[in-house]
Image (cartoon, helix red, strand yellow):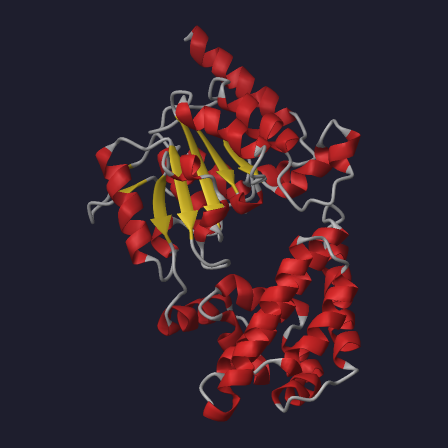
Length: 381
């Protein structure tokens, strides 16, 4: 009885504390495993692990961005953390939706569920980390939010595992060829994991993780949602796509996350703004207004994205906007590959985008990269 009273008192103490990073560390659960759309193979893999009662200590959820990897990671965590998880009438192991653990996970208040994101840098004790551009997940964030708490006792316990750590955008863990500080620090924990601790790396670029990390984790593949699943998702969410419905669904390419972002940030209007310059490039002509148009779109999107949350980095926002710009131009070029007269030039445009991406990785100023891209696009083929 004494132990039970101590545990209750400890939980009450944790609930009384206010963590300014709470929404980032433990975001609320939006969907359980049975409501994840379009990923039957991934769910089958996770269900088999749950039914076995033996949960591997390290997982990699990999696939395109916005297709449900992070959502599934939260749903998986909610099942393996819950002592009330048991076979239901269908034979699948599921918790009671109204259990104490499920209520905590839905509310984003479970003390043993931790999410690690690059934005947590703003809560670091180090001023240099707080002022970082958030282009990577800082080692300080990994140390404070994962490595240190991983070796502490679970607060609640009783489930298949005691603690779950989800690293979102795990590809942003540094991958220096000479000194991959964050990944090597994480590797030591993966080699000798604390008992009852599960680490899930969520990534859209699995190849940026060290081979030694990939070899120690169980991989779960996610793919784009098929058309019927996307339609079901849109209907369920009540998302109004308006007259740009076809363009938006084509741009999303089976990714609900990409679709929501396109709607919320007005990406559909980008096509109209870029159309004259891309049409000139298709004809092999240079449009001097294309670079300014691209720059305005990137700057406007980045400014709006940062304005939604003061923890976001402008540099990170610019890179995200550029990624979306390059993706949109790439889709334009790939569509032209089906037209024999334009196929050669379309290949040249795709190569031009690749060169622009390489220049960005080499830290060339974005404005110069866009000037070069505008001149390079019509020269292909």
